[in-house]
Length: 142
Image (cartoon, rainbow, N blue to C red; front, side, top):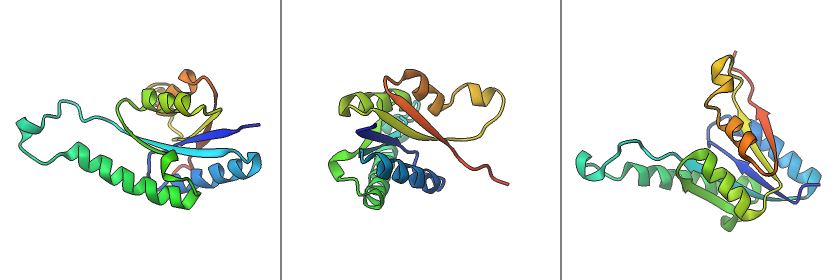
């Protein structure tokens, strides 16, 4: 069974639904758990040109604070909490390889049509991973 699970989170409110599934899988398998969140770089973002504060840095700081709370909720030590900057798929798959994850868990929005087939982070992870991937379908808003 699984020994090291990587939970890839977007840190939204829907994460609570996925957290319950992650917790259940960890309880069932007795696997170690690491968590990762990726901050996408801001396209065309130039500090000097805009003459404003480091927005990307603020996003990373906020993500780290949210990850600490999530880490506490899931009993994940700080050294197993990862906040990355870059392309989401690449960074998640890189962390999975680096830590030797044998399962990646992520949430998936129930989109329809082309948006279900194209551009989905969960889909990109699924097709690029060297390990198993569990996508948890998030409940649709009514």
